[in-house]
Length: 173
Image (tube, rainbow, N blue to C red):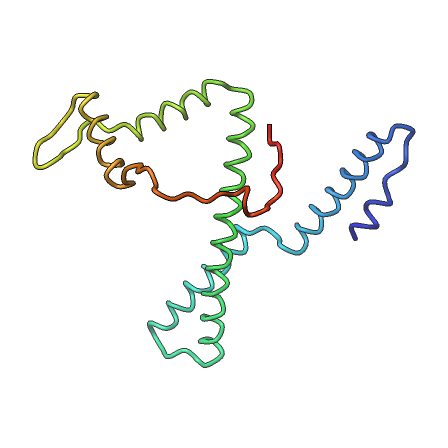
């Protein structure tokens, strides 16, 4: 199918235009195939949920037959799959629109940066039951914490002489 779509595009003198037309034809063919094979996810999900609902109503009044139980279990799995697929589609659509809006609108970029700044801001730190709100004191507390966590730089008594190992050296400048 992809090969057929790729070869269906006419060749023009400009190679970039030819490539563009081939990619466009392939994209249209794949989108058509996707619509036929995947279908409308929201409609499928709605139908599966409606049948599940009807089976639950029937179960309230009587015991379900083994075939109905199989159908209910299959529809539950199918509903979970479709819900996951719909969530993925929505995330991708959101990301695409966010990127396209972000390219055209610097206010969106600034709003996102401001949100991250507010999210990462620490208004206060508590150390040994005492609350510190002063910026310099917070910097000192955080610096002390990570210095103690990572340890101190200590001069070593012994080192490795790499030249004596005979390893070829490379000028990285």
